[in-house]
Length: 325
Image (cartoon, rainbow, N blue to C red; front, side):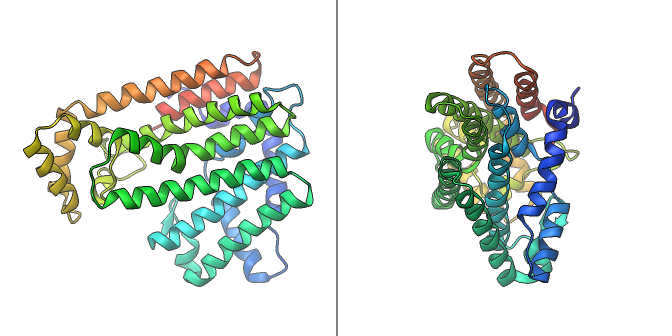
């Protein structure tokens, strides 16, 4: 890939630095243990793509970046971080982004309370500043993320997920968050409801493309950030596998679903499923759809006036579908 996130971030570099300071302040607590955990969470931050989407989206509009934009980005980070802390408890996960998870270091009870604390900080940040529109957008996204996760768990039992159900799951589970980033950015800049919805839809398309790219990593090489075959081992139905099963004969489909259900983490069984998906054209199909959603996002983006932030959002779309982790 030719461009890095640091290069994409250039038009909002000073805003992102200021955001980091404000975000840390929004997480402060007088309780020593809590403040220690908050410092740990801030230090292990990821790519920070979510606040970037908020700031770039705000800059698409005449109102531009305001104090409300900073609060909106902080709200998303607080609520999203709360869901991640709770997810690690639910999944009994000891690591996140290569670091120990909160529950691994401080146990489940403290991790659940930390998630609750982050949630309340986000809600109070909005309420104290009368950011009701921003709170509504982000609260909807958190609800959809929870519904998407639960729908995925429900459907995982049968492993016979249709493409339609798959897209509904990833729209809620993954795309709703990026969609809310773009909608919050637009709302914080004083955009009208139609423009906020257009920004939201743009983010949703990017989010779907992002998730399909994530699905493709399951069939890649060992050099990528995510272990190969991890989705298959965890019995998750991804787009390449769903397509391959749709095209398969009744007997082959039955055998492959059996392999996914009973792989028990065995690499040779997972390898059979990966070979089946590759030979069935599942990867090519997923790449085609990923590019389609990315192009639909670009079409929406190009209805906004040209600007450095619009160019950076174009680069973020490319980064999303070309990244290697």
